[in-house]
Image (tube, rainbow, N blue to C red; front, top):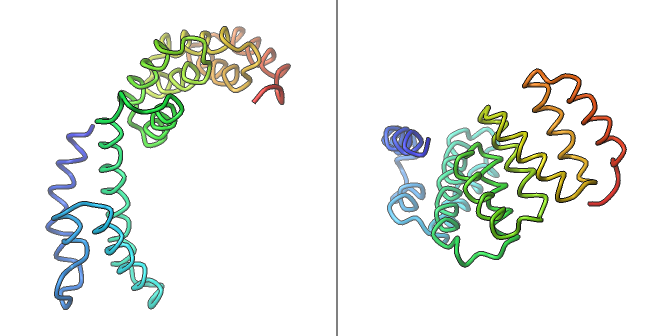
Amino acid sequence: MKRIFIFTLVISIPFILSSADTHQESNPFQVYYADPSFSTFEKAYESYSNQLEEDAENNNARLMLSYLYMLEMERMLEQFEVRMDSLAPNIKFQYANLLLEIGKYDECIKVYEGLNEEFPDWSCPWRHKGEAYFKTRELEKAEISLQKAIATRVEHYDAYVMLAEVQEAMGKYTDALATLETGFSYKGQGY
């Protein structure tokens, strides 16, 4: 998936650069792309944001901001990946959650697995790993992870809800209903 993203981006860059304002001496997106850093990102962001303030219908500025956000997010994600061993557990968990939110399921599963090994009684990484497996349609693995989330914290309401969804997808309708009913008994408890 990462290769497809990079390939698509490389193919798109000439079109992006040619669509940018050519009357400027230096295109802020080109400057950022040539030297990706927070400083060049900030300058490009300010430039395109100012253009949008001047003209709310400036779709070129809106598009350039969108590409900037995407590229900067990828750059930040790479920095988390190389610093993985030094990240605090809560930061690893939030990093994995971000990967989950943007559909990088294989990558987030690896981070959750590391957290499961290091903190086997922490329910949340089990629950989120179950969600990632569900989204990749690895239903048996999803069910096991979600059951582990519940075993480590019996009042983990959203683990029950997710488990019921997985069981329903597996055709285990009776189990799904029982799981959901049990989960409802914990709604509003814990965190």
